[in-house]
Amino acid sequence: MPSLCGSFCQATTNGCGDCSSYERRIGRDKLCPEFFNSVQKKFTDGMKHVVIDAAIDAYLSETPRCFKMADLGCSSGTNALSLIGDIVNAIDERCHEKTRQVPQFMVFLNDLPGNDFNSIFISFSDFGSRLKNVRRRDEFHSVFMAGVPGSFYGRLFPSNSLHFIHSSHSLHWLSQVPPGIFNEEGKSMNSRKIYISKTSPPSIAKAYHQQFQKDFGSFLKSRSEELVSEGRMALIMSGRDTKEPCNKMTTLLWELLARSLSIMVAQGEIGGEDLELYNAPFYGPSLREIEYEVLREGSFTVEYLKIFKDKVGSGDAKKDGAALATAIRAIQESMLCHYIGREAIDRLFHIYSELLSEVMQKEEIMAVYAIVVLRRSP
Ligand SMILES: C[S@@+](CC[C@H](N)C(=O)[O-])C[C@H]1O[C@@H](n2cnc3c(N)ncnc32)[C@H](O)[C@@H]1O
Image 1 (tube, helix red, strand yellow):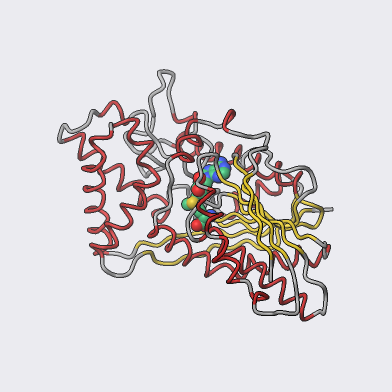
Image 2: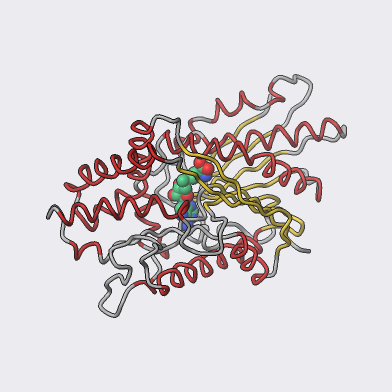
């Protein structure tokens, strides 16, 4: 029987103290309702062979007695352990093919300090029954787990301590709203839009891109210290398949949320001045922008880099609009409350749900993800 061991390690140096307010808020008010989980799982399932192959390559580069891996931005939903189980099973199988002893596995689950790590630990027993060699009575191996709270934009692990790092659907969240979108009085220069939009001045796209460069650069630098030489990292994040920063597929959800807010302003339900402070801490990079940052940081070789697209929803526009609005609400509610007040939130997401359904009736909404596999250079 595999032995499963979970613990909650509070002892990281990069706790909440140096997090931006976005990171503190988004981590405290949990994010991923089931609809969102299932959408993300569908995409992760479509790309997971790439992640599993990268983990096998990382294992075969060193064949350690204890294979150490981390899931960054793991959240607390059902997806958290699913891919980890697939990776353990795949390495287990590969060892059997090569009549090699199966390694022990040390799995670190990271998210912001407000994440509900305990609910992941509670699901350990289900996780155990998914491991293939539970069925094999002739072999023993172990999977150990620990929670690591902290921002992945700083250091989380000791130097040279990990063989494989994975992160899905998390790195498109910036550490903060780009400071460059605000004027000297602290007002947004994004003309009542909340992300890069067709009507945004060029300085807005530039400010978002610069924040992405700063954050992704810090992420790469920290991971380069933590991964062993020849270690692998597989990252899945929202992306775009065009050079232009204003790409309909990446911006549509934000456009519709901005439109919902404007409707409320026009009807006098909220004040317009509040919106001049609110923008989304999100960025969907192009493959070129990702590759450029990897080359600039200099510690990794790109092994795989691709855009993955698929449609969102079941075909029932009314239901899909409502479900998507609920999912976006889970992510944005705490931040929006801060600007428009808690009492306006129900109305806002009712309008948003209707706008989404209207659009989904006429056209398919596509989600676009970038997937990248990096190898730590020797
Ligand atoms: C949409 S969930 C993704 C969950 C899961 N990885 C999946 O694929 O379904 C995004 C997660 O990223 C986490 N996150 C956002 N910014 C982070 C940061 N700077 N450091 C660590 N986790 C972060 C959020 O708290 C959230 O749990």
